[in-house]
Each structure stands twice: as structure tokens, then as C-alpha cells.
Length: 208
Image 1 (spheres, rainbow, N blue to C red):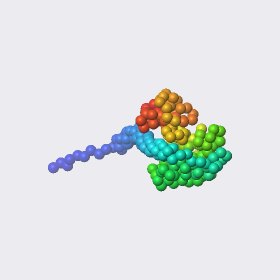
Image 2: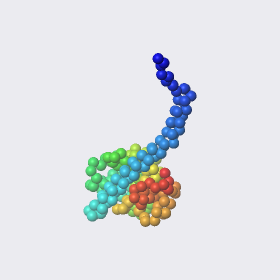
Image 3: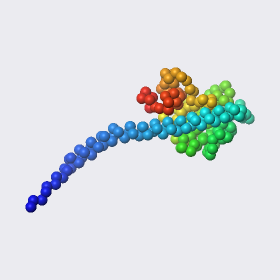
Image 4: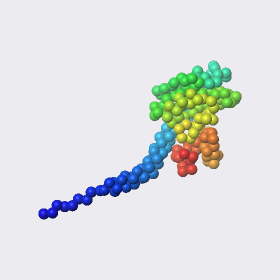
């Protein structure tokens, strides 16, 4: 009785198979990671947008807060805390706020954050003078404070987003081309508004 012959893979065949698997992984894994990052970004950005709008609407009906130190202080953590106490604390549960060197950071439950700082770039009013950045990852908000030279350096359209602080936020506009221009320029100011305009999607022409 003859024993059945079993064919074994040669070392060369194994190496070729591993090489093919490696090439496929190299082509697919970056795309999978990017898609995951986009989903996290959209989920957290939309959640914070809802917080922004809801709290601003309630705040508007309650009446604006008065700020004792708002006229003079720039790069002031005391002003940032005062603003957060007025703008968010009454309307957002379990708000974790950290006082930093030049501003303050809000840690949200989903791991995202908001950096608040009254910079000296504008001389209009405290309302427009506030520099307000949403961070997909909270630790990026703390890092902003360590390098707080200019708001123009902060947004990147992937991990950090510039916000205005009106009731509607994100500098909403109906003209998508305008928003895209503001998202592709150096400042990246329009990226949050572009995502919002596109129905909380990152389209193929988004500068990812």
C-alpha cells in the first residue's frame, strides 16, 4: 500500500505569498485607518456642533453674560474660565475644565476637547475677540496652549477646527465653493463649515 504524497510549500512560495499579503495590506490598511479617522472626526464634530447650537440658543434666551475682566485681558486663563462658566457650564453636564497657562481647555466625554483663549488679534468686542478651537483629540487642545502664538496656526481640517462663537457656529454659508476655498487655504477656517454643509460627510474633494 502506497502512502499518499503530500506536497509541501517551498520557502520561495511562502515568501512570495507573504510578499503579496504585505502589498495588499500596504494598499488597504492606510485607507481603512483614514476612513476610521474620518468617522471619529465626523461623530465628535457633529456632537460638539449640537452642543454649540443648543447651549447658544438657551444662553440667548437667558440673556448674555457680563464679563468683569473681558475688556482688558488677553491670553488670560481667568477670562477663559469665566467665559466657559457662562457659555457652557450651565448647559452641559459633567463638564471637565482645565485651566492652562494662557487659556483653558474643556474635556468632553467622547475624548474630544475645546480650547478657549482671548487673543489680541482683533479689537472689536469680547464676543468676537475669543479664539475658540475644537480638537478631535483633547490632548491637542492642551498642546495649543503651549504654542499659542496665533490662531492662524491652529486649524488643520483633520484634528483641529476653527470655530466662531455665534449661535450657529462654524461660519455657516450656503456657497460651497466659498467654504471649500476657506478649507483649502492656509488657515483652514472653513473646513468645519464645509463638512456641515455636506451633511456631515467628508466628500472626495475634501482636502484630507
